[in-house]
Length: 532
DNA sequence: CGAACAGGCGCC
DNA sequence: AAAGGGCGCCTGTTCG
Image 1 (tube, protein in one colour):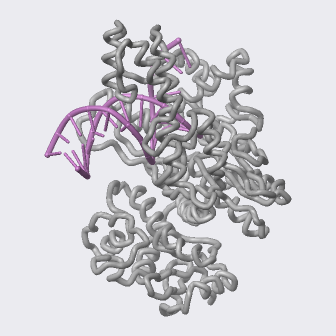
Image 2: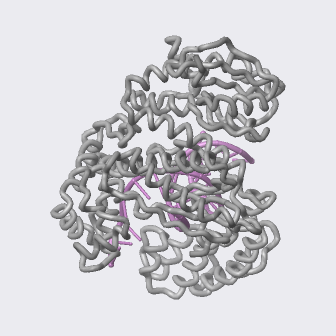
Image 3: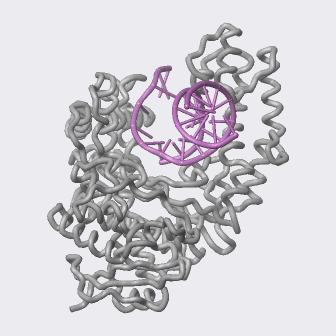
């Protein structure tokens, strides 16, 4: 019988890779094998294309470094996280060691901190055990749990695992980033690059204007000092948030707001950032799959999910290459329509807010967008109330869906995404009414955001599969919630764009079957990320 | 002195 | 016009 799964310990630190063939249900079909090197893994991939059972996303890194790509995976630690939460055992560790401990009836220790690729130490817990045996054992238990769970959880486990492969591959590929363009953009906005630690000319000038307007020097970066300065000028502010400052009539307001915006750019994505995070023309953030409660990814390093629009021009394809920039149009309201089966809310592929505005809000797209976002985020103020009443009348199923999720949160019940990602409950303790309402807003948003994250995860997996299957030279180089970037030779750009649309349609079917709700992608083929 | 927290704001 | 869900990460500030 042909093994359909292969557990893999990539070794490292001088240790060779080890594998063990498994049946689909996780039982071993052969003894453990030691391979001569990682190229032997590539050979197995070519011959059998198994589903590789890996301990954690990081396990893929040495393979990529050796030029070995895997087709499919089961990521034991990521799946453990899903299963532990689905079981209502929140906050329990879900690392491999913890999973083994649970299997053996022991109380798991907290997860070890993420290890760097340093040399092994005497105290490296991982060096001590038999990682391959642990992976095999925990995977077997997980397959039994998944067999008893629904098809949603099985799809979620596969998609989360595919996400681990995508994440590592994107880090390895890197986002093409032109330091010269970045430097030019910064210089245009901030003035010439200052000495390290220095303040750019435009920031210094704006700070002086703020000083002059208040009639005394102050540190514009200090909220306390700014509040005191405004108080002396007769304006009692609660905070120094820009929207609050904006409402004040004082000569310091304009230069202060300009200062805050540019200072933010300088400190978060300025020259220091460039020096730290861009090497050899690539920005390589580390993606943390499932790093957010909702299943959205987080990143470590470089604030990759907050690249400001002002510097996106620095993201440029290599000569002869293009970027395919694709984002899902109005993903979350479409997800809500599919979840609640309120299909009238999302009847076609056209801009959902524009269409909704035409039907309900006299053509005011802004109102339509505010109404829907308020429904999904739980906003009630700011004129949202009237708009929500319209939605409640016209789309009762959709509104009932989010309101039930909110009620569940307020009452301390569990909520789950469409595929079964489980939202951790509120921390124990006597709930104040205000805290209960906050919890309701959280769970109201969770059901939509987490399901949207699942859709995006399946899109990524499908897109990766399409590109691999067709031997496309295009590479996924960035992913941000509902947006993907491909780096592709110019001649393959249209084909890559088509693959994105296909993957999006497939993701919709995989989650929602024959639902009429469509998930159109806005796709552009550009040289620079800033181009429309 | 560094760690932890708060305020603030970038992105979705 | 007003301020609602999720993050990461900066600076300033306070704590130990």
